Every structure is written in C-alpha cells, then in structure tokens.
Length: 118
Length: 112
Image (cartoon, rainbow over all chains, first blue to last red; front, side, top):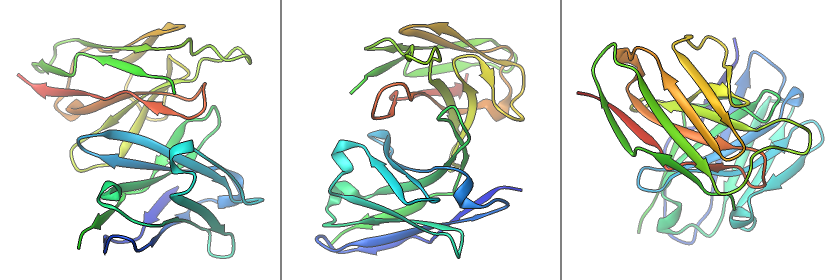
C-alpha cells in the first residue's frame, strides 16, 4: 500500500527556515515524481513544484523559486522541502503528493502545518 | 498563469440529488500531445485532497462511478449523480497543461 507520511507541525519565527519531510512507503520514490502543494484556507491550493528523486531534477512554480528547495534521500525513501526566510504568508498546510503519470497527484501525504509567528 | 474559475462557489444538496460544478479556464487546456490535463479533486474536512477525475473524464482508482467529468478546451464540468453524505467537502479543478499547475478556488458542497 502506498503511503506518504509527513513530519509533524512546526512553529517558526519570521526570518527563519524549516525543513519538512515526506517519507514514502509501499514503493520506491525513484519511480515517480513528488510534488509539493501549499494550502491556506482563504487562498486555496497552490502548486509549489516537483522533484524527480531518481536524478534530483526539480521544477518550481516561479513564485516559489526562491522560497522552496526540494530534495530527496533515496536511502531513506524520503522527500524534503525546505522553506526559507519565513513570513506570515508562509503559514499554511503543506502537502506532498506523488505523481502517477498524466501529471496527476494520485497519492497525498496528510499534510504538515507550518505556523510562522513571533 | 492559467486562471481556473469554478462555479458555484458553494452548492447545497440533499442526499440523492445530482449536482454539477463548472470549471472555466482562461486558456485552452488541450496540450500539444493531444491530452487535456484537467483534473478534479475532493478535499473532505480535515483531510488531504483525493483525486476523482483525470484527463477530463477518466475516473481515479477506487472512485465511485456516480462521479463523472466532461468538457473540452476551456469549459469543464464535474457531475455527481446522486450525492451521498461522504461527498461533502470542497471540490477543486486543477490544470496541468500549462506551467505552473493551477487550481480553481474550490466549490464547497454542503448538505441542504
């Protein structure tokens, strides 16, 4: 069974950074792209980018180009997203989602709530 | 970026009623490879989104056949034929044809 287990909630100060994890089970992360999506209830869903864990290739939405860094550790079957220079605008739930061909997000993690507050 | 406009923003339905949600794109979603990368997702309260429909009309794995998708170009529709209680939540259309992926603002389905 495919599962994506995301790390727990984070509280950070403005200006700091945070690294979120998404541990995959039931398959090898090198077999599929991993996407990351941001959710703020009043702003809806936004696609951040994807990583190909097989070779580390990444693609970002332009607005997240300097905000997010996607990486993957094949030895632990885990994808990561680092968010830098945090502001209140980064307060959101972040999801990882596995691609399944045809650019669809077939499997989703449970989400990680990041709260940025002084 | 491609803008997806969903209507209505909120829909109230009784159990068993049929419901349609519209998604209109600011650009054609027909890709040069012949596919139309338009999807529908449902996010139930406090849950992750779930894939319902991909490539306009293909049913996701394990999705009941009361869900159906149709449309082409810039106009798309999700239909639920006989709403059940578990269908309540927010429905999003998403496009993957143009970079970046973009989401509609969502349609909240409530019980009347």
